[in-house]
Image 1 (cartoon, each protein chain N blue to C red):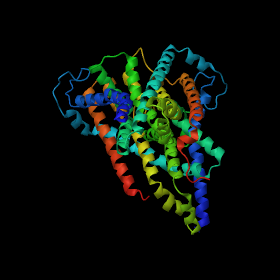
Image 2 (cartoon, chains in turn brown, yellow):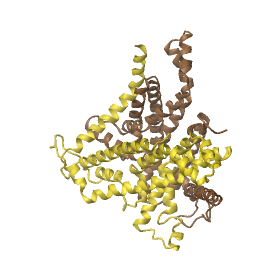
Image 3 (cartoon, each protein chain N blue to C red):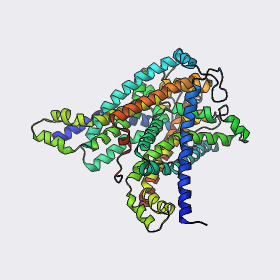
Image 4 (cartoon, rainbow over the protein chains, first blue to last red):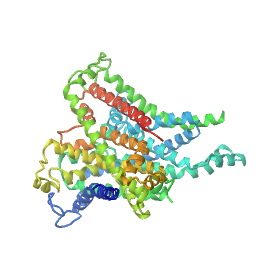
Amino acid sequence: MITKRNTDALLAFFVAAVIAITAVFLLFPVIVTAFIAFDAREYIGPFPPTALSPKWFGRLFHDPYLWSGFKTSVLLAIAATILAAAIGALGALGISRMSPQWRDLVTTTFLSPLVLPGVIVGFALLMFFSAFIPLPVLPKLIAGHLVITIPYTIRMTLIGLTGIKETLREAALNLGANERQAFFTITLPLAKNGIAAGAIFAFAFSMDDVATSLFLSDFNTYTFPVALISLMRSKFDLTIAAAAVVLMALTVVLLFVLDRVLGLERVIGQDLYRA
Amino acid sequence: MRAVGSRILLLLPVVAVFVLFLALPMLTVLNESFRTFEPGRIGSVAGAPLTTNNYTELIHQAYFRYFAQTYLLALCASLLAIIFAFPISYYIARLAPPWMRKASVSAIIGLMFLSALVRVYSIQLTFGSAGILSPIMSAVGVNTNGRTYIYVVIVAGLLHYAIPMSILILIGAIQNLNPRLTEAAQSLGASALTSHLTITIPLCIRGLVSAFLVSMTLGISAFVIPWILGRGRVLFISNLVYSRFSEVANYPSGAAISIVMMVLSILLIYVMSRLATSLDRT
């Protein structure tokens, strides 16, 4: 018999099951990879590994192909992050001072690369550069990464700015500060958490990009993900698992910094009704 | 007057980047997509005659399959993502104790930041034909080399990103919902299930649509996931564009595919946001 109590119990069971299945689905593969990177065997055998050893990490660090990609990626991510954070923060400040009807339109325009497939950005830049501005690989990669990371820095800065009352800046101006002083002593310090969060997003997505970088890389200058994916396509070696563990460690570091800078709870917003 | 000047100055760098590295390159793509391609060359020749062939040849069945595959698999992943994400978001937003909330939010943001390569490699290692679950799969009679299984694995790859993303979006939507409404329905005699079906879900429709839309946009532009998990047998439109560039150097065709892909994405976003507005009852 279907009673209210039965359906409620069924619903609770269903929700618990969904949570359990999803948690296993999301975490299990990642845990498997982290474990198997320490596998002492030469081949991919049954799980769990029979003996552990850090040898794959040794091979990873002595692989000149991957190491070169890693250096390029870190350099590229740092350059792209600094530029994207500065350009995005200035843009967001400009947007925040606009009248409401313009603000939405301009914000949508600058966030549009978020829905643009990375392949198209890469392909378009490749054709544009080869036709009009011949540049070395690294500046081309920086240009591509700026396009894909600036939307994040703009958005995070805007989120950071929403909490700041315009009256604070006006008070400073009324008390005799000029525009520049008000900017450096009031607006910038208050916006800095949002800008920093944007920079973290930019770094993470720059380190992760494959589709755009693949078009702009060549045989001498290529990013870490581009090197990894070609390795992944040619052989199924556990060096890649070791590289994956390094990238996971990077994720944890970024997560920790983001929590420090902005607070992870703030990323999801405030609950209006929670006691 | 001064304020307008500073505003333009602030926006100048970002406008410069967008015009130079996005708008002009996209115009190059548009131009290239109407050029005649001569096999054996790299891209179109300067001043090649104009043509619409690059678009008309896309109607051919072989191309249609790439589009159908991409959209269907992305659709499956997006629907599954919101179905799985919704109860979890509700739990995190409303029921979880603070420590659990903090832990799950950290885990979810961590999963979002996780490199696409780690994701793909992990899924390959777990569900792939040589993966650690393959003995179990063959024991229960699943053919890990079949096309259907490849589809399932690609959807799993898409879900690995789409679920955490949808959870984050839906937590935001559920937090803005007044819990008194469901409480009122339940004290008036509705079961938990009915009250959620008739109150929570309709009022969260905007969040559900935007979670669906984000998953869908990421799904149809997926590149690495089908490239590795599709094992060369299942490819998405992104992979097709890349092969136009890397294998046959037919840039005009790649450009036409890119333009079609973009137009379809814009259409999708437009239709979905109209749908959200018409369904929205708040």
